[in-house]
Image (tube, rainbow over all chains, first blue to last red; front, side, top):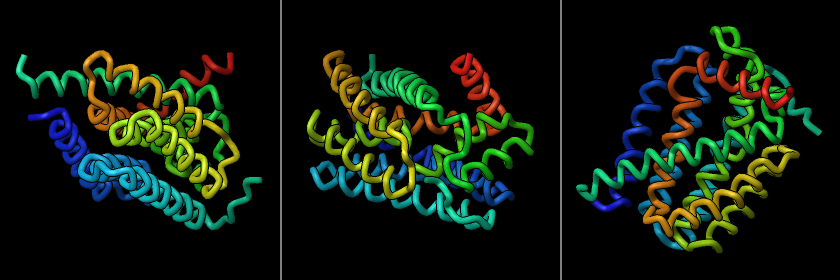
Length: 85
Length: 165
């Protein structure tokens, strides 16, 4: 097993673990940290299986997009607009 | 030692290094002080309601809501894995843009990404692969956001007390 395959295995296992915890958590806002772990793991998998300069852009775009979605879900869920200046 | 066993040992070491990098930078940039957006504040309060600590919860909410130093460390590892130091610096630029998209006025993500680029590159001279740092960072974030929110938030609050003095 090469270091790359070992890393891929760890990312995959953590992604599945995070997905299970995400499904088991009842509270919507407390689901989001598990979703964050899942996004980290998927970002890692994208970079590991796509070793091309654009792979960095793909991984970062996926990660920033998922973070922005979590941000939007959490802020909308509590009924407030984003008031950060 | 078996080559795959060595890779897993490297991943554990990388996880500890990544954990220190993002926790030190996030706490230095005052992430546990308050939620950056209303959603982050709400996540902190919900974690507190389940038996966690408020300031640790705020930091966890902030990690969810905008790319912080942990995201910077992950993307720096991805960048160095693919293209060496220039890849890590490209990742830092993307994290900077991501921070602005997520209404984050801070520089924790960009700083964490630049520091992680040089840390990961330095560790390649010790026989580590940047791929091991990708897995290490995923493992490190799982210890904070993915195992026990009450315990993680209490630990982060305790570290925040140390930082605040």
